[in-house]
Figure 1 (tube, helix red, strand yellow):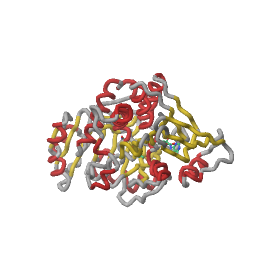
Figure 2 (figure 1 turned 90 degrees about the vertical axis):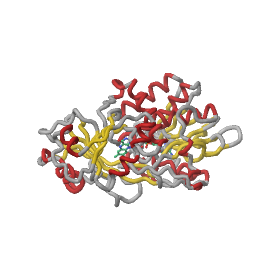
Figure 3 (figure 1 turned 30 degrees about the vertical axis):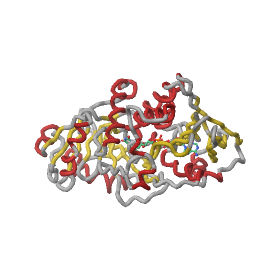
Figure 4 (figure 1 turned 45 degrees about the vertical axis):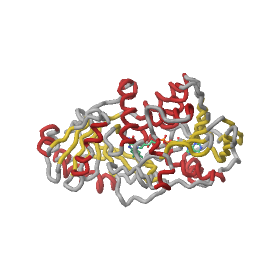
Length: 398
Ligand SMILES: Cc1cc2nc3c(=O)[nH]c(=O)nc-3n(C[C@H](O)[C@H](O)[C@H](O)COP(=O)(O)OP(=O)(O)OC[C@H]3O[C@@H](n4cnc5c(N)ncnc54)[C@H](O)[C@@H]3O)c2cc1C
């Protein structure tokens, strides 16, 4: 079995296949993940979603992360989510489905928010809040390393600096044309390679070889539509830049809390000696953009929202930050399933690939090995839902 793309999702799939007795060969143009979203996220893990399939995938992941919590830095300190008058009725109306699927979640008034997190001293505009104690924060790098280590123990191999620029599914196998880049592939060269039409990937400095596998899976994150296009199929997903920054706030210690999501859409949590904060401006254009706006992002988007909610954030220092890609679909749910005979896919997680990685890997491995979904049923995420008008619209999105 070949897996194209060994980010957190591809690595989880390799482990899940190994658990089912199938050895995976994972190929990636950059195993260190310089342009991979798995290296650039906020580490949030929650089953607090509105769509049952998203809750189910995250719940399965959380149950696994609980077992390996120390190894992957899983801190189950909950998600505190603040809602304004417009969004609160929607949150309340989904509590039943969340609880029904075994996800504990409390309803809080604004006054209760203030008592529970005294640092939140500006309660204006909060119509209500939810607190979900099983949610939390994880170290995504440790989680990816965990998947890779376990999968290697189960027979998986990882090929680095290998770019796939042709995929031919046949009746008895899948043939992949691979370009092995030489060791000098720099960041700029990598970016040029990834952003171009994959069929035109240069083979001047490396070497071409063919990989044959009984089946293959495309797990290339935001780059997946380019790979799928090789089969003449368009994918309704686009890459959108998301920025995060680290701020120094010595007077404020939020380490007792997990993720806090403000009514403004700002999310933040304690991160070592700093606070990690992210915000996704709705006007961000689609495209493979990785530039971080630095102080401008901090001053225009982050600081005003933090200070509007908590007066202890009056004095803050911008430390650093970065940008990465969300792979976003029209209904903001992932695309998973069978793409063609012997060819599978799992990508476009729309901002939740870390928290769904375990569940998604297990579900897809069942589909590949057993021919159908098992305990984690991701059938609702098949790409034909767009043509059938059966969207899995996930509104609880940041
Ligand atoms: C700022 C930010 C915050 C986020 N916060 C969270 C969060 O709190 N919680 C959460 O769950 N998710 C979060 N996400 C989303 C999460 O990071 C992604 O959903 C997840 O990492 C996707 O993993 P992946 O394995 O699908 O893709 P990736 O990690 O992008 O891996 C894809 C791999 O495919 C390889 N590849 C691509 N094309 C080719 C090719 N042609 N040949 C060979 N290899 C190829 C790439 O090199 C890469 O290693 C966030 C994302 C960002 C940007």
